[in-house]
Image 1 (cartoon, one colour):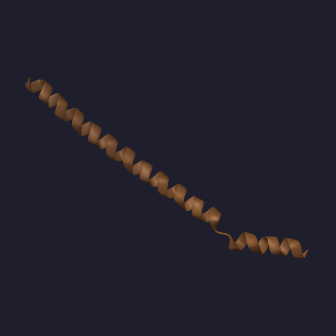
Image 2: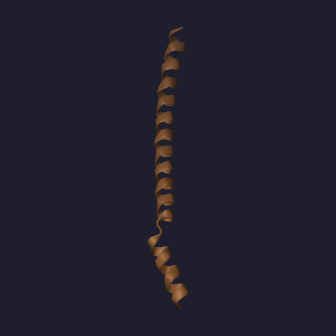
Image 3: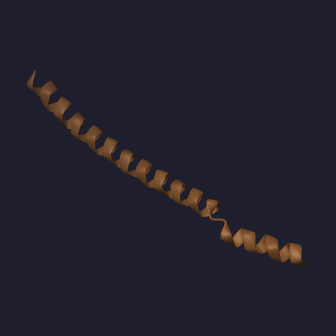
Length: 56
């Protein structure tokens, strides 16, 4: 019984799993921001090239 209690205490003390989840969420948020930025820049560049093409 003491072994099970010791294992439960060690599980509660360890926070490596929580750290990995936090890193995962941070990477996901950065990826979403990058995708949004690239999409916006791509749309704006498309409009610029259409204007240049029309001028030529």
